Length: 243
Length: 243
DNA sequence: TATTATTGTCTCCTTTTGAGACAATAAACA
DNA sequence: TGTTTATTGTCTCAAAAGGAGACAATAATA
Image (cartoon, rainbow over all chains, first blue to last red; front, side, top):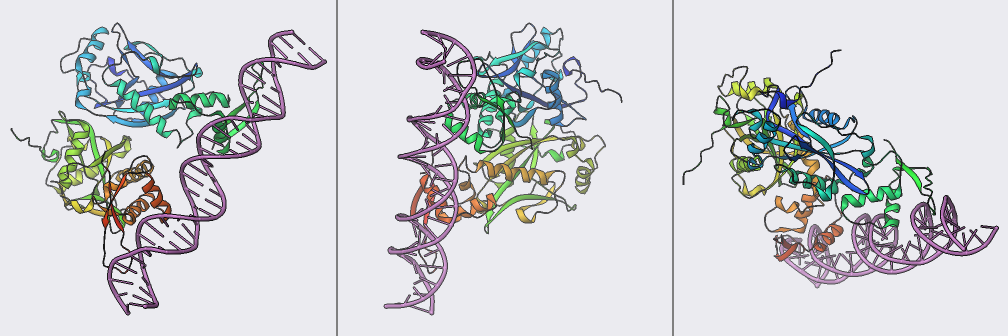
C-alpha cells in the first residue's frame, strides 16, 4: 500500500487541495506539576505564539484532519478529542499577522495569497497524558512546548479566546463525562485524580466527598498500593474501567 | 443610509462573495399542541426536505449570517440561538441531491458549479415562540412549515443527524440554562412550562417537584390568574425575570 | 349546594452532599 | 523497639435536594 504523503499546507503556494476559508485549531491539555498546561507553537523569528492548527484536505473528514494533525504534533494516535466551537467572526482575522509569519519563513506572499484570506476555524480540545508526549513543531514554527494556563504568552488573533472557551467547555463536560482520567497515566492515586479535577474546575474539592463520589460511580478499579517512601500510609492505585 | 441588498446565493452562478466550502444549517424549534416541532423547507418539484440554511458572505460574521437567515425565514429578530456543532464528514455531501434541486429550479449547473462542491456546515439551534411566526420559504423552496419531531419526512444529506444532535444538545443544556421559556409566549402557566420541559426531555415529570424546583430558582414572576372557563381552580400566569 | 378537575402547597421519606472525625499505616525518629 | 508524623480509607452526623403522594383551595357545572 502506498503511503500517503501529507504536504504541509504552508509550503504550498496555491493552497490547492485544501478547503478554502476553513481551518482548525486544537487546545491540547496536559497535566504536570499539579497544573493544567496546553501546547503552544512559536513561529520562527517572530515571537508569535499560536495554537496548533491546520487545514482540511478536500478528501478528508474534518475530524480526521484534526486527529491527523494531533498525531503529527504529539505522536499519539488514540486521543480524547472533542469539537466544541466554530469561530467565525470576520474581525478575528488579521492578514498582517499571517504575512509576518510567512515572511519570517522566507515566503513572500502575494496580497491574494490564500493564507492571507479570511478563515473560519473549528476548535477542538484534546486531553492527553503529559508523560507520553514529545511535542514536535511544524515547518513554520521552531517550538511546540507546554505552557501553564496561568502564564500563557500573548497569543495571535483570537487564540486566547479559543483557549478560554475550551476550558469552559471542559468544565461543563466534567460532570457528564469521565474525562479527567485522560490527563493521567493509566494508574493513578485518588489524590492525583482529585488534583486534576481541581485544576480544571479552578477550585478545591473536599477530599472525602470526592473519594466517595468517585468510588460510588463504579468506574474505578483498585490495584496495589503505591509506596512513595514517605512517612505515611500508602495510597492505592486506580485505573478506569474500560467499556 | 443605503439598504444592503442580500442576494440569494442560489441565484448567483459563481458563488462569489461567499465563503467557499462553508454553509450553515439551523434547527428551529417551536412548540404547539404539546409537541416540539421544527421548521423544514421543501424544494420545488423535488419532494426533498431540508433544514433552513445558507451561506456566509465574505464580509459577514458567521453568527450574524445565521441570525440574518433566521430573520428571513421567521421575521423574528431577537432569537435564542446557539451554535452546537460543525459537521464536516466528507461523505455527508452528495452532489446529485444539490443538482436535482438546482435543475428543478431551472438552473442547469456545470459539473464544477460551486454549489455542487463539498461543504462543511455549522449547525445552530434556535428556540422561538411558535405563535409569533409566519415562516417564509426562500427562492429555491416552495414551503417552510412546521413538522412534529415525531413525524419528520425524509431529510436530505445528513440533516436527520443534525436534528438529532440538536435535540441532544438542547437536552443537555436544559439544566444549565433556563432555556425552556423561549418556546412560550411571555406569560404562561406552570403546566405549559412543564409540558415544554417534558417534550424536550422526552419523559414525564412530577408536577409538584417541577413546580417546587422552578419556583425555587427565583427566576419566575407571578402575575394574575388565568381563567380558562373550565370547572376547576385557575392557574397563575408566570413570566421569566429579565437580567 | 354538591360535584369535578386542576392547582398551589405541604408532608414524609429517601438520596445526595457538606464537613469533619477517626482509626490505620508507612516511614522517620528517638 | 516504641513514638511521632503525614496521609489515607472510611465512617458519622447534619444539611440540602429530590421523589412520591396527600390535601385543602377554587372556578365552573350540574
